Length: 203
Image 1 (cartoon, rainbow, N blue to C red):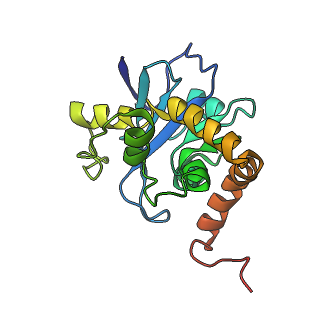
Image 2: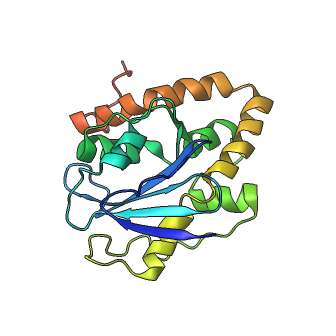
């Protein structure tokens, strides 16, 4: 396993052939107040790329091209938040997407534990540390611990997708999952537009 750190953009020549796992680190969870600090990615090959934005410069042409590539599936855990952050900071509607949290909620109805740490433990036998989750991601320089933490959030998403796909097929819920995944960019846009809490489908 290798972790590659980049400032401001991805390097030339990276290939993501089997979908790309993506996560983000921000200054907080308020979409309108808190800024995007890091985007981390993995091709599912055991390597991770951590892209740091200490200067708030989001031009990143190579990363933008990947995020907007309609032929590339983007894997997330809790895609709703990351998609909204990408829409806000890059102006990109990122699709198509796959969300391991949504898939887990559709098929793991025997539990209410659908966090990434829970999925990695229950489905892969991997224990993740969340010690750096609330560290200062807006810092000019990230620590080795922060970079390793960021990488861990994307390294297992491909394997989780395989396990969750098996469960979706077993329970006959793949069409429902696909419909939910297709709606996620719109759900993120609704969050940004002010409908984060209100259920517009309610009476």
